[in-house]
Amino acid sequence: MISVAVLAAMLATSAQAEEGDWLVRLRGIVVAPTETAGPVLPAFPGGSVSVSNAVVPELDFTYFITNNVGAELILGTSPHDISGEGSLAALGEIAETMALPPTLTLQYHFAPNAHVRPYVGVGVNWTIFYDEDATMALNDAIGATTVSLDDSVGVSFQAGMDFDISDRVFLNIDVKYIDIDTTATLNTGGAINTVDVDLDPIVAGVGVGMRF
View 1 (tube, one colour):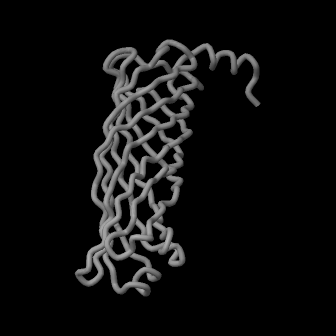
View 2 (cartoon, one colour; view 1 turned 180 degrees about the vertical axis):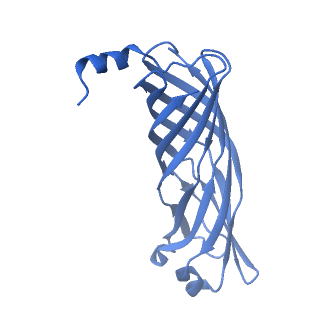
């Protein structure tokens, strides 16, 4: 058990970052799309889609340009199931995909010398979709189908907080909103259907970090 004296000594140190320092964080994140999807056109005007949440690890790196300003790059990938809605709801899951969303964010850290350090950020996101596959349910319903999703470039917003554990180690909580818009294309033997989807996920995470 940690004694009061040891705990006090830990809190007396700070994992504060300074100009030229690097922070590395490992988070567990929930990627929760707040999607708005249009109809599947032209064949299924009464049908639409929804996209599942995902829980995955995420790694990020922050470089401090000044004591208050940092640039963060996040790296991670998440699996998502795509389900039919409306007239396609009876099919259940119709496709699946992986999303790789590298995001570069410019952050402002309000209290770089404190033991609790809040920050906000704004940045740019590039989301790459890969390993898209139609499910057996979709293939059985409309014929053998290939699925592809367009990549997306959009803005991201961030807020978070670091909590000292020691002079180099800290806990982190972080929330992001990422603007991700894509068009999914279904190719069934040359017959093309498309659906526009604004994913716009909330990405919430908790993790641990280290200063170098």
